[in-house]
Amino acid sequence: MSLRRPYKNQPEKFEFNSDSLKAAQLIIEKYPKGKQQSAVMALLYIAQKQNDNWIPLAAMKYIAKFLSMPYIKVYEVATFYTMYNLAPVGKYFVQVCTTTPCMIRGAYNLVEACKEKISENENELSKNKECSWMEVECLGACVNAPMLQINDDYYEDLDKEKTLKILDEILSGKKPKPGSYRGRLNNEPENNRKTLLDVKNA
Image (cartoon, rainbow, N blue to C red):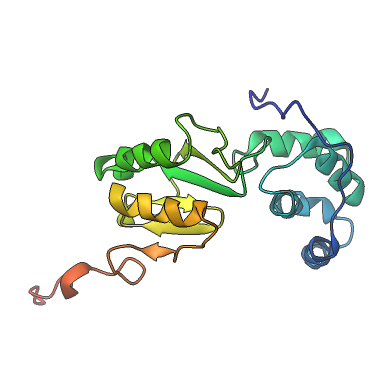
């Protein structure tokens, strides 16, 4: 049984807007006839994006009808996976990775920045109601640690000062440039270092 519980204050209705509807139909077309229920995870994500980064119960019911599947099956998926937010998280949702590689390289300095700029507590909206943050498990960018994710974008090779600047931009309505904040392209070596240059074939 999931310990993740939906938000108490729920909207009564939900339906896809025109853009979400087109996106949902394109995804469903990729599945064989009669297998449209396999699109449930993608449709939940579309609903979340449309609804300011969280999924209300009305959206789960809407998706259940949309895919001709029992509501409880949609509910089970939405409450199981932590990628789905069951309560308001703000227009800008900041996820700070604190798994070992990021932790070793200073992830908790990023957490301090979030506490200073957004809110003292996780899952608590900022004063302007635009932003919230939380610690998460590995986001899969260990080589560029420490890093955080804001909505769909990764911000990597961070320290507290750089994180504060990113959060200032977010809170002022700007979109900071994603990627490495040490000038790297993707996860390329720094200072033009290469591996195995001095190794000769036996």
